[in-house]
Image (cartoon, rainbow, N blue to C red):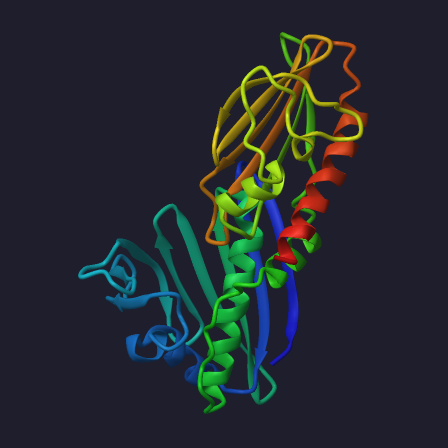
Length: 283
């Protein structure tokens, strides 16, 4: 089974991940594998119970839970071609079309968290590969992308590391949001190089860039937050918040006055963050 295409589009605050795979099996067999709980349990991220009709309830039971952590609703059930349902605030649509002696399976996952797309894509990559193995009569391997290489490949493919610059009432502000692939404690240790920052002291080198030298630390809360002042009248904030499966979400901002060269600073910060992500992959 080889990928046909993986694409990402965003409109009106919602992002759609579309993944196509060709399977060497007829639509009815693929339909059974994506709708019957006994088959779903072997490749889907959770155990699933489903009332297979439009409006029917879908339950998602994760390992260790005694009852479904969340439920959804079936939005489409057209055997053997379309199965779609909600999952929290997300929507999953599976389409099966005949393709020679096999089928073309298309998953469209629609969600609000654009920067989680690489996590979702790498997770579905593993799951759909396992689905193909199951259909081929092999043991389904649903081992997660613990190393992070697949996640980082999708992040690069979808250009999810690009930051933004905006003008505000106070001046200019740049922002980078990026999903990381190691625990927050490990990221913090990499940034601090083992020396815990203190208020009033210069920020550790790991939190600086070539365009932004260390200023005095104004706020610190390991392993979540570090802020420091910049000249003139600006601030850098590193925030490690809850992410999507692989590790914390980094939100990095720098603010400055109206003549602050935010574009140059953004380029330096993007290089800095990519270097951090590359080092984390090695650990």
